[in-house]
Image (cartoon, rainbow, N blue to C red; front, side):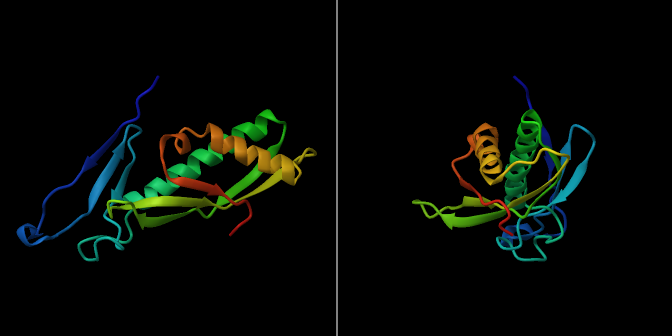
Length: 155
């Protein structure tokens, strides 16, 4: 169908690599020319070996799930004749340990708030159905084993 590419670049700079005291900062570059500073999460690797102002993989994973849900939701709303004016989500990923004691993001809670314009606006049941369908049709959500909960207006 299609391919989606990213280039990840890390360089061993100053620091003490043999002792594990080296920078986890790196760069994500995408096909459109955007480069984003990235780092290990400061909750996993403490600063200064990580950079809290950079995107970390855990945040990016949560953002990917939220973004895919939003894009699918807006598309489905359009198909149903609704016109979203804004969509805001304060998504939260919860880390736990699996059976092998390996950390993983086991649950993501999406808390979207959607406002609409125009004459036709969904009632609560119609909006819940749109969120249900958005989750079912979001290819990111369908690609992972993480539990994804949608709690509209939950933040």
